[in-house]
Amino acid sequence: MLVLFETPAGFALFKVLDEGKLDKVEDLWKEFTTSDSARKVVELKAFNKFENTSDALSAATLIIDSKPSKGLRKFLQKHCEGETLAVADSKLGNAIKEKLKIDCLHNSAVMELMRGLRNQLTELITGLGAQDLGPMSLGLSHSLSRYKLKFSPEKVDTMIIQAIGLLDDLDKELNTYAMRVREWYGWHFPELTKIVTDNIQYAKVVKMMGNRANAVNLDFSEILSDEEIETQLKEAAVISMGTEVSDLDLSNIRELCDQVLALSEYRTQLYDYLKSRMNTIAPNLTALVGELVGARLIAHGGSLLNLAKQPGSTIQILGAEKALFRALKTKHSTPKYGLIYHASLIGKASQKHKGKISRSLAAKTALAIRYDALGDGEDNSIGTESRLKLETRLQVLENRELGKSAGSTKGKPKIEVYEKDRKKGAGALTTPAKTYNPAADLVLAEETPKKSELSSKKRKHHEVKTEPSAEPADEAIQEDRKKKKKKSKESEEAPAVEGDGEKKKKKKSKEAEDEPAVAAASEGEKKKKKKSDADGEDVVMQTEESGKKDKKKKKKKHADDE
Image (cartoon, rainbow, N blue to C red; front, top):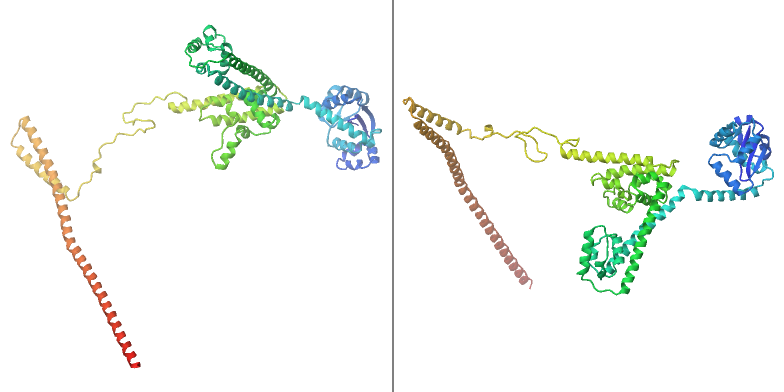
């Protein structure tokens, strides 16, 4: 069995002397502790030296891509007939097997053997010292990194970052210059500002017209598409309230207009360049969110590879970091979108659904970025499919809202049977009309029998009176009915009035009974106060008398002492 080993100086082929030692993978490293023990396991069979650094660089780049170079193929065909070749890369082994029909081997024992060869490389290859191997490997690594830097897709996105930065700067400068032109020329023709609203058209009109007196004789059809605007411009130029301007001032204003037009032309060229770069580097991202939003996301993330490492939740709020940390600090709701808000899909959505669509769009954008940064394909199939899915989801959300407002989930108005008892207004419930409930009336229990007795007696009395007349006239019957109704009303009102009178009498009797009790209580309180005042006066008199007695006793004692 032969072993293929790559070095900065060239390719080396080693022959395995004792293949039985490869079965013990754990103890294989012990065989390469010294150069003598390593020579008992492997032996150098052939060495293919690189002619120069360019040859080494081309061979190294092909080996990194798992492809054998032309020199390596010739070298293996010459020395590997009927032998099994051990390689460090399985993909390289498959390529050699397909092209050269050489059996290749790659396993854990081969990798352990490669580590041992790398440890004793300078001892096993004669004429290759450590002092020569170090500079060779350093030079090859520098040239290889320089080559990958030129053609690496991770580094081409720096052009996108610079282009979108310059595009934003140009927009700011264009806006500043256009406002300066309007302000400067406004002293001469102030009415033109309201007539021509577009900044580029304004600069073209000013450059073409110069003095407003020339507007009548000029044709602005190439600049202004609408004829009404042109007629308004000419009419306003005749009756303008602006001041007169010298030819020197007009020449400077025209030079500023030239600067505005040159910047606008360069901006269109830069946008076309950015569009082409985005379609080649990130086609799926461009299909989802557009060129400008995709370029701003790449610029904010630092590179396409750094952006591919971010999750969808981070991409959703990328560009709204200040609002996010402010919301976390003040414990308010966090923002739902950042730079992704300017995508066309979120612009189509209603305000209620912008959060849902931004979340879905951020998730799909993260997948598209990862495919663009790490995938091999250069088509935009994933981006276009994701965009179609998001558009259908948006339509479903919008139709659902329309269906709710119309009364059904399918978006069609729901036809309902007319009900006379249905309440008016949105969301009203269908309830039956309320009827009079006689059981809810409150009637006094004591007076009800009196009412019923009186009414029954009167009804009997009237019935007795009406019995002798067999068939009275219609008019007499109607008069009798009216009298009955009046009397029944009077009989019903009479007990109620009597009840109210009895209640008032009871209240008056209670008040009359309470008045003497209140008067007696007030007299008792007055007597108590008088007694307390008298007792206080007696106590004062007693204290005064006791004080006089004490003074007399003191005087007597003083006289006896003398």
